[in-house]
Image 1 (spheres, rainbow, N blue to C red):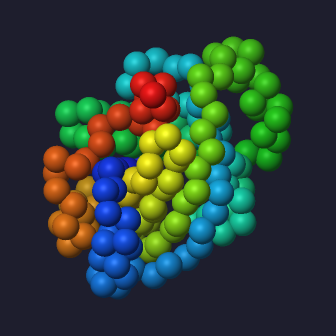
Image 2 (cartoon, helix red, strand yellow; image 1 turned 60 degrees about the vertical axis):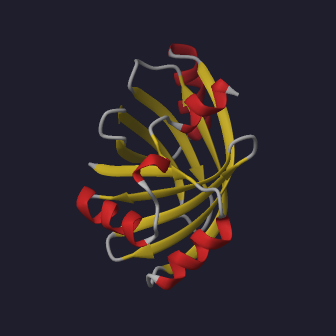
Length: 163
């Protein structure tokens, strides 16, 4: 299962310079759409639409997130889907759409970790690290100078709904 930990960014230029300084390789920049559906507490179900350039693959994915506010991490599984509109229709009828979020994302890669800078209108910039090894993710946060107090424990849909 992939782990994601994210933090609010106050100084975008400083973070981007730090990412380059630790040797992360820029991969791409894309605009993405995430369709969140109503689900149980501490879980999220969404369809992510990621155009050309997304890591590790381009395409449309169904993602299931589990959120643990104590450890401040999200774990997720994803599967590629071919027919977004049909799946969206079915999930909307069964669960209901909670919110649709459009974002701009810059992808970097460092060893086995994907580093994303995510911009969402009304929320600002976030740094998201994804990988299989939680210790490796925390080490990269340390190298980037991101303090534990900056780590965000809420999902993007939760943050948007609070606005």
